[in-house]
Amino acid sequence: MNNGQKPRLLIARAIFPQVIERLQQYFEVEHNQDDVMWTPQQLQQRLQDKLALFATPSEKIDAALLDACPNLRMLGLMAVGFNNVDLSQATKNRVMVSNTPDVLTETTADFGWALMLAAARRVTESEHWLRAGHWQNWRYDSFLGVDLYRSTLGILGMGRIGQAIARRASGFQMQVLYHNRRHLSPEQEQTLNARWVSKEELLKQADHLILMLPYSSATHHTLGAAELALMKPTSVLVNLARGGIVDDVALCAALREGKIAAAGLDVFENEPRLLPDFLSLKNVVLTPHIASASTATRQAMAMCAVDNLVAMVQEGKPRNWVNPFSA
Ligand code: DGY
Image 1 (cartoon, rainbow, N blue to C red):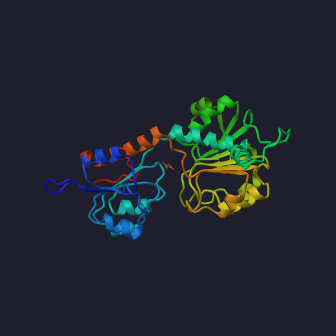
Image 2: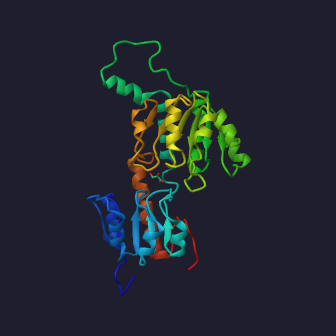
Image 3: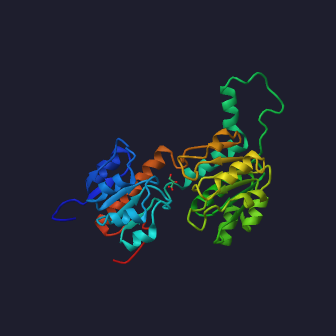
């Protein structure tokens, strides 16, 4: 704060009005309630006099932007994933970056099950068919799907959300296998009734495979043609994590050629411009990055991002600081 002035903050996208009201208590706020999609240059221009940015997964906070905005010191992301931020450049430039973990765990896990069930039981495909007026009669073989009950659930990436997904599997009496760099403790494995297996084993054994890895250059195209070829032709793939973890071209080919049965996807490479192939495939359920989108959870995420920004002003650091550095 300079001369008793409040620090300046930019809100990059439209947001709940109560977020603006709360931030205005601590910052001089410029908002974007018309939800104009600023170009990187426009964002850069608006950030020139700002100390803080309230951002979403849509903004690309890369090295060029960070270098071009020397006054920027605080970034409050309304997301748990922060792959849209060049973290090492932010650290170099002494920009504190915060995210919103925990508050979205259960809602996102719920949505994983929604996508898994919808893809396995062909919910959206059959609904489109019905709405198009094709339903004449009951048939023994209408929209035959894949069971979840007593099948094998594979979870690739066993962090908070992966574990919340696993907790829900007991109601379906599923066997839970997981792969993660770090093994869970024996107690956690016992509670979740989950067993660590190699990635290859996971791909081969899972009837339903959920991806819950963070995106980075190390996880880029974790699932490509070779990995998809290991999966069962009856298996269902769900990606809730980030586009880029799956090679979308390879996935479209696998879905088209029946190498896997179906997929449920909430995230895509280059979203929101997804591959046209996805739109013509019937065995894929597509949603627009809404896994955390319940009213309560999106409000909690927004308020968590606000709390982080306020803590940066009041306590010198955010609660959920993803690139801690010393003063
Ligand atoms: C996150 O928090 O990273 C989600 O993808 C945004 O909904």
